[in-house]
Length: 186
Image (cartoon, rainbow, N blue to C red; front, side, top):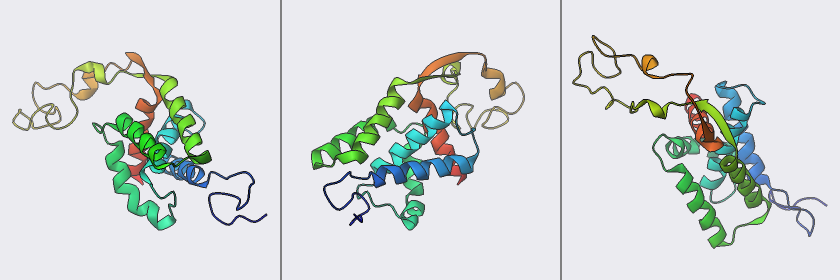
């Protein structure tokens, strides 16, 4: 039986989760293009799953096209940016889809991805435990040598981060910045 739409078989057969599969494909291609981490690693999967969730949940029509991908890049950058309450946004987006009666295999695959991102922990360098705040306010524009820790008497950021200090993080907390950087590099 030939499909009548991109999101099913057109009959009573098995529904094909095209919206989720397309979101995963976009995320996978962005991460591979960015070349930040080798494919096949848990870190790569975390980035792909976080970015696929962002792509899927930000598209309320479930009909991303090639042109739609390019027009969505800025939105994905803002959704995955540091300081954006991404975890809360994901929960609210799931609730909104359920409230609208959206469901089916796409939503189930997205939920499975979210469960994996929440329940899987990855060992990563403790960047947050340094006490250094991100952004130009960390050193201050009025500090000698300007922002960024350059100049006399100011330590370099590399001197403040102990790369041996490791913490267990939910996979989404590591995958989200990887996804953000991949979109930015695209």
